[in-house]
Image (tube, rainbow, N blue to C red; front, side, top):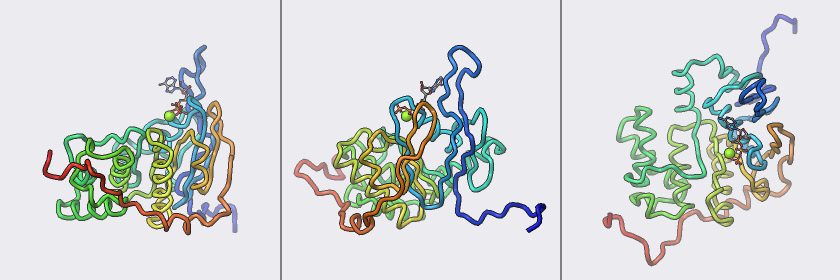
Length: 267
Ligand SMILES: Nc1ncnc2c1ncn2[C@@H]1O[C@H](COP(=O)(O)OP(=O)(O)OP(=O)(O)O)[C@@H](O)[C@H]1O
Ligand SMILES: [Mg+2]
């Protein structure tokens, strides 16, 4: 191949981060190197965790990947396009159609039912109403919440609310889910259920996930775990040896109804 031949990407990279930095108050006495010369590649349908102490830079790095913040040096590419070369409109479109976001606090609208919360994202993206309802129902089925479809957030447990927010994040068929401490507000068993759901989403829907967490136990579900420390990233663990898909397929996601369930018509 001669040296003038353009680079041909043969691997299935989705996100490529090269020497990315995000410094606050750069050059001043109170400079903070929240993200410092980070290199990271996320492939299609790869599940990646960023683990680290509070303040180590996880949220800042997720914000750079999601185009919510900009590098002060280095670059972040999504499907081989540098986010720094995209204007606000293009970034909004990218976020809306290629990325889904999941947060520790669920951030569901309290006045809307589960199915309406999921539909809202599609309404904003301009999907016709019939298609929206059908897809929202399919997504709630995927996360095991068919029986809770018409419940409002306050009628759902924390784990159920997080599953609604995951269904919502999947609504526009993203290629990347960005999850910031998705299990941070949940007990450990419910947190593991969310991890098994993430594993299924990666394996069955071919969606990549990048997740920030404090919890070392969650690494067993990911393809790759990275450690963040004072803005720097180092490799923690590679893929597991055990057959996780086999383990995960035995897990039931349908919630067990309890006696104090509120019926749909009670609100
Ligand atoms: N707007 C800002 N101005 C100055 N410093 C900031 C700003 N936002 C974040 N930081 C600093 O950047 C560093 C990384 O913060 P970040 O929120 O990314 O950490 P984190 O790993 O997500 O922490 P946590 O686990 O508590 O969520 C911290 O030292 C924080 O104080
Ligand atoms: Mg954070």
